[in-house]
Image 1 (tube, rainbow, N blue to C red):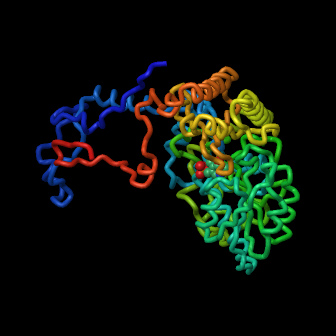
Image 2 (image 1 turned 120 degrees about the horizontal axis):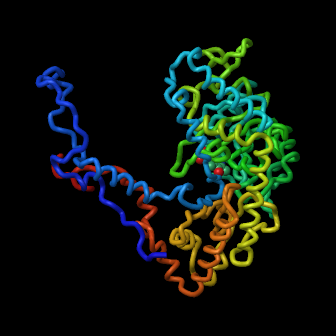
Image 3 (image 1 turned 45 degrees about the horizontal axis):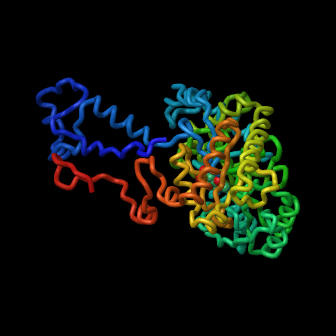
Length: 499
Ligand SMILES: *Cc1c(COP(=O)(O)O)cnc(C)c1O
């Protein structure tokens, strides 16, 4: 391991040299400028960087190598399911018939894409045990909003206007309460039971005529499989509320548990997590929602439908007046949906069961290697991801989870999700998924164990990490509050310089 890593590079504007250029552009006619209306012409040339082609290629290729990616290393973010994306999915999504299809193409010329989307709706309905699926939402968070808006429409359609509350457990993902408030509800947080699962009695006490919905993540963000779902859903429905399942962790229950059959009324599926698609850096994604019979009338429009003659079409505007309407342009993020379709068809039903089995095996293996070095809450439970806490290490050495996460970068690993779920002190949420080899899992466990020893023997080494990354510790609060995301020229177009 070297002690210096790649260096930050100058921006492409700083590399610019006036007059330098790349490709040759054929000479335009002499009076080309005069042919343009004066109002449409620039007064001064645009402040574009001026580089030759080789400089430009090196700039971007070097920049790309500063990124961490699942294709270059282990990416154990918990709750995010960062699995390997088989390259055949990329091939499929890039087929010109899919990639080049105009989003306004008439149904007759879009039959192949419509068929794939319709089949994907059917497959996801089967996997989730739901009555119907909409592929429209662009991400899990938007799927949540879609689901909660459908729940709101359902209560309103029954003249039930007093249901203003959404109950979430304290282990929930931040998007759950955010969704509830965006849809105009008040979030009530219900504490977890001592075993880390949902506290059914606490939910019973909070449920009432003001409850619109409960939102449950199953398996939970503690990595636990909820064992009292039946009881909980019975209480929810008896109170006249509906049950939302956050399906971000579907990877762990594929082929084993169907939320719709268990009684959930609506769920979202993060196709980019469960069914591959590289999504580091926030996208792209697709968050289809599945609904039980009560919510089918409210699904977003347009849905993809199959005609009696076997051809496919989009719902026409106004065809289903009960719909909550459109959540996203066109039919959804088609490229991501094609990848999910390719993944699902490549695995088949049995392959998907192997996915959940191997994911749980990998998580339990890694967990068992770290027991003793880190505190593992609810360690004896079977997990698909797990929280390792550095609370004891912090008490003994002053080294915190943030330091350990930064030190992992020096060992070539992307840090896991840290300080989430909020209910575990100094937590790291680790999810290996089914796609990592035992050698990689061992190397990661070895690194975490070595770092724990370093924390005791030479805490400053860990505290000052990373030592090999292009940047060290960033001021994350300032970066979040005053993001500086844009380069601006300060002294005119010819001599650009950074902010
Ligand atoms: C990822 C995640 C979400 C949000 O999904 P996005 O696709 O990132 O919008 C919601 N809940 C849980 C538990 C998640 O892990």
